[in-house]
Each structure stands twice: as C-alpha cells, then as structure tokens.
Image (cartoon, rainbow, N blue to C red; front, side, top):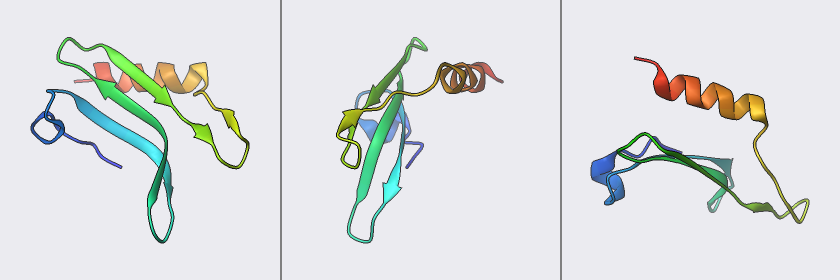
Length: 71
C-alpha cells in the first residue's frame, strides 16, 4: 500500500506498507517510513500464520536504501 506522501501522513513522512489484501481488509506485514532527514524506519509485525515476528532480509533493506537514495 502506498506510497503515502507527507501531506497524507500528517507527520511529514513518506510511508509504504507491505502486506496482503484480504477480501475484507489489508493486513500489513511491514511499514517503511522515511522522515524529512532521510532516516528509514522499518516496522515488522507478527504474522498470524507463523505466530512469530518476521524481519526483512539484509538484501531487501539494502535494496530499499538504494532506491531511496536514487535520483
């Protein structure tokens, strides 16, 4: 879901969510937030199916950082 732009988030950040759309809702597994200084925060949620926290791979985080730095 997203990207959500700073004028949509209300706090001046960019946000993107990764998850699954179910017929009745969107279930977010991770939120990526970029603040005005360029700081990236990743929030990962427990997956109901596995009942354990999930975390993005180091390669995925590196790719995300490269995308954020691209002009």
